[in-house]
Image 1 (cartoon, one colour):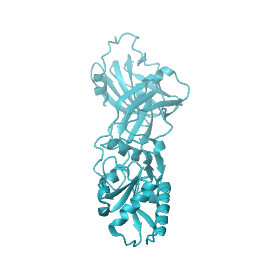
Image 2 (image 1 turned 60 degrees about the vertical axis):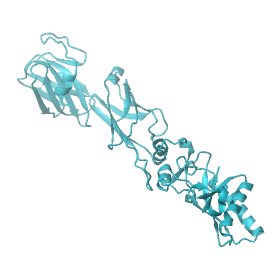
Image 3 (image 1 turned 30 degrees about the vertical axis):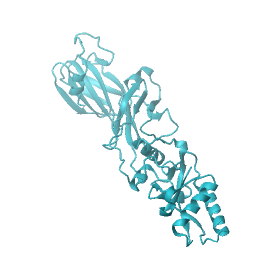
Length: 365
């Protein structure tokens, strides 16, 4: 925002240019013999001054943190101070002498932004993100009220934050992404990302807040409005990639990660059954295990599919068993013996009344 635009957005001050009394946000220049000192937290590179009465403004680059003001109109000025860190500090001064000297006093201060409500740096869109400005240096706590916070999304679909609140060194907001992808995909979604900055007396610090892979995956469940919306504790690194037929390095599991346990038990029982019944099958293989929501949609899976909840396997027999369609009812029966919810399935539809038409066994838990 330009100085003039900013000034017009403020309530006009009633200041007598012949008086030495001005509001607390202003600086008084009393004479041409005594410079005015303005405390800043960063090296000043440029200022712009705008006269409240005349509307005249001028800009000047700053060297050695000082500026001679010669033949300048008297009156109240809003000054916008630009600093080396990219920060902007706005204040007001009253000039009572046409020749004056402005000096910026650099206070050695360090600031950084810290997340306060979570041990993780990542997030999903249903989180309320909270931060505070950590100040290293000797400052008056009243200065914390002058912090300027700014949040901006790094892509057009990230939004620029909603329900923002700032209070004496703290800031919080709700992520507000838009146009989320729910049409199915075989690749990972991009993360939601924001740039958050805080400026105190011209010193600017900023951080990029971005989703990690775990929360990109969790976000899909929010985007699709699944009944199951996993916590971070329900996301598991897929150490055995066989069980992961999704787009990420992780799987989400509603009731613990039981893929290997259930497959091994089912496979062992099936091999024993084949040996006892002279069937030429060396075991079971699976075509689908865990699928993230986007992948599930891409392959035609049902909404809230057990695969997307980490609670299903699709099984087929290995070998030339010679039973054709009759094999499915036998595999299903082995699962039932193990107290598993095993179903004859054809292309995502249960066909338990006609198992011979199945093309796999869907076991879920």
